[in-house]
Length: 317
Image (cartoon, rainbow, N blue to C red; front, side):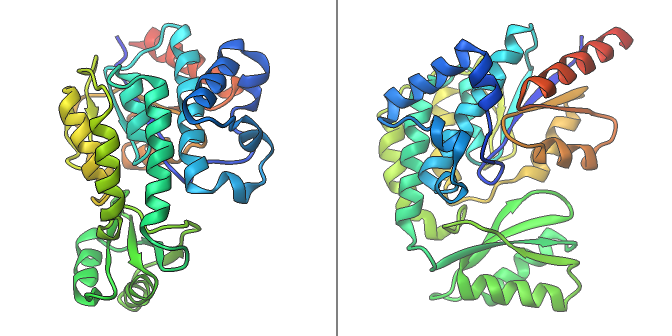
């Protein structure tokens, strides 16, 4: 039996047009958008399919939009009999993973991520915070630079530990710029400012964490049908109460994605399938470990390729 891990992307993976082909050809995909509209009081389909990009990129829109697309892809893959033994989601993607594992109802997840997006945007005014990806420098060195440069009025912290080669930092604009400049001077290959509207996964998000915890506490969480590797610990969890707490703590904590991939590799996973827009996570896994087969599902064409690829692996095993 092929051991499969499902991966779910986070904010930044979106693009105008995502999910349109499924929506146009599969009634169940249209129904998913209708259920989401009931949950948040707004139909996001026109924004997903026609944009404009700046409207889709708004945190309050893009978080539920990506979740909808991910669950759409998940449901269609499962209709073909494919399931996972474990899952992980990058930041926002952890909500999609919990829906997949049966811990959260889809409509509850859509409602929560809409609130999450609003709370994150409210926590830090536009223009005050920033994020940047530092490539080609060990995470420990970047963490040291952040400690060295961060001050009371200018916070900067590691936010996404994406791979051995890439760490994203977040905080006040000037702090992020100073760490980026210092990293270049000390040998980083590249520093890339990210087009985000708020500094996610750092202590500046504390007001958002406090508000989100109130919403999470009002939401029913079930125990999971398979484990989800949490962003905060990079360890598997199958308990509903722990899943709820991890989502709250995740807001101000770094996403430990490199450790998450390491954990999945250690579990003897044969294949990963990224569900939702883009191929960032499957691409990171491909570079992390070339022995694992990497697939994605974001449209009918990629669904067919994934099903054919998994069938081939199954036949060979």
